Image 1 (cartoon, rainbow, N blue to C red):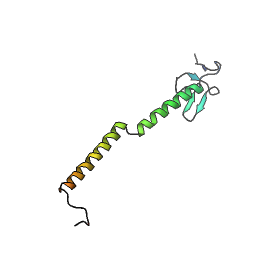
Image 2 (cartoon, rainbow, N blue to C red):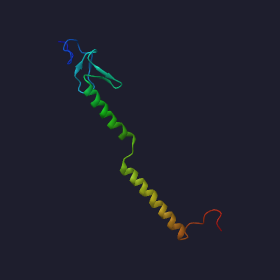
Image 3 (cartoon, rainbow, N blue to C red):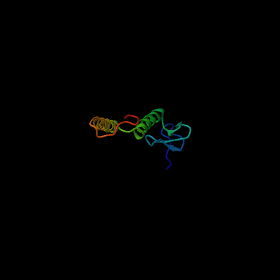
Image 4 (cartoon, helix red, strand yellow):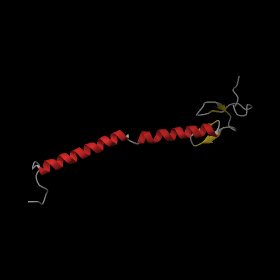
Length: 95
């Protein structure tokens, strides 16, 4: 038995909704740059999910950024302390 579109119930399925996987025909499908969906709601849900996932993959975590900032600050303090305690030579051009 051939599956029918869940929207019009007349035509045979052409796609499956990317979000809910329901069968939908070519005329009833809601098409976006992401693919074919059975409704605007499914398309919006899929789009929102993709948007929420993309930035996390590109952006380093705040914890990592805080750790790097702390390490840089500690290195600066260590260099300054070594300089003032005479463990580092003077700056170029200074006698």
